[in-house]
Amino acid sequence: MKTHAYKMLLTAGLIAAVRVVQGGTFSDDFAAGLDASHWSVIQTTPDLYSANASSGEIRLAKIAPTPGGLQSVSLRLNFAPFGGRITNDFSTQMDFTNAVLPGPGLDQVQLNTYYEDDPIYCAVYDNDGGLNAHVWDNLGVQGRIPVSGNAGTLRISRTNGVVTAYFNDTPLFSEARPSALTGIDLVLQNNMSSDDATAVAFDNFSLTATSMSPPPAAVGAFYFVSLTNVANFTWAAPDTVPGEPTGTRLPGAPVGLVTLAGIPFDIASNAAGKQAWHADVAVNGGSGPVNITNSVNVYGVTKVYSLINTWCGQPGPTAYAWFVFTGSAGTIFTNALVGGTDIRDYNGATWENNINGTTTINVFDCLSDNWGSPGRLDMQQIALPPEFATQSLVSIQLVDNGGPSFQRVVLDGLTVQAAALPPLFIVANGGQINVSWSALAGVTLQTNSNLATADWMAYGGSVTNVAGTNIVTLEAPTGNLYFRLKQ
Image (tube, rainbow, N blue to C red; front, side, top):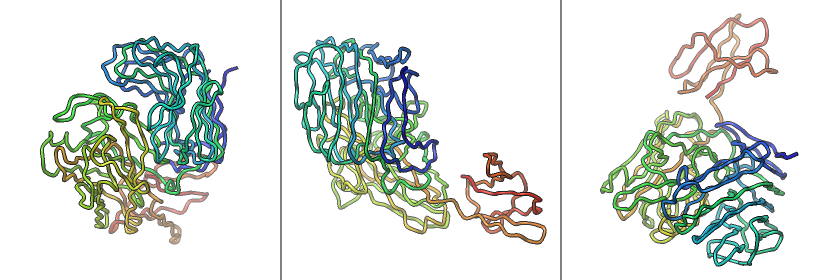
């Protein structure tokens, strides 16, 4: 019988505390089809490929003409159950069958692994100069060997910080990759504008690791800040920027609910298919400052995580972009985004290419954009001053003071992390009880008479606000009555 097994502790929901998972194995033979809680289908161009999960395997096939450049379809593993990262030894593999790489273009089947501080490392089966298997890393093709047939097993494992790729248990190439594993894709790819009718079936995937734990920052509740009302650009599909041709800048870029380096993001699409705010698009390629302000209204925010790369880019020490955080008690905090430290160009070819690797880290890489250069997506971690722990973060403003062919920021995701909701006070007053809490947007009082059930209900009685504090007064209950706040 075909099965998939999850021998781990899971976390679920849009707002969740990431938990530590110590070792285990995830396996999936796709007997029940493609489980959306485990896998996402990512295409560089919508509807270019089909994904059929009806036969106990995942069959991918190109079904439409290629628009040019590098095109691919990927099955992306959800890394949230692993805390978004795997820090120690691991082994991952998948079987492929019925691979169709007809040529004359460059066609590829790949097992891609992504790392926190390094570019991707891929085990590849392709038709370049005849069927072969090899490794692709940031330096190019490594360890090529000739192979035969249209099926095989691709495997990547890490031992003591060294990763090795295998084809049918034959080692291909090893190199040091000690940083955390942050993603895995199963890929069918048409490279270098190949219009070949490619296809492949994936089966029997597994991932085993000795240690799976989130980074220290991943504690508390996460809240997504929506960008859909200001989104004017997409990394993941063909789009146009003033003065440049249409192209896909980051093929396979994350979209939707994803976890990157242990931090959840909702990179949601609006009706126009856009997820990001591009400052240069906002001013139609013009000069001068531009900004957006996003409402947050979350109590006790301690950290903010953003996905920002630049269009062009300048080195510091001068900052040409910054965040402004405003609290409900009047606290204002400005955080500079300095080129070469906090932010850098999305494309590794020119402009600013450095980040500090601590508060800003790389969370996504692609082999090539439509211009043939590798691309990347970075995450910034911003610690707010302690004053924000006792008030609501009302809004986040992003200011861009760069210019065309100089530096413009692209914001692709925004998540805030809160340590706790405000305290709830319950005081007996004769035959009555008073329940009080700080009045905050989106925070409601709930009640339950039995903690053995999940029957929490919104409190439907009168709530009085006195100088920013909500107060509920009610007759003392004859039985048990429990209260909690929910945001």
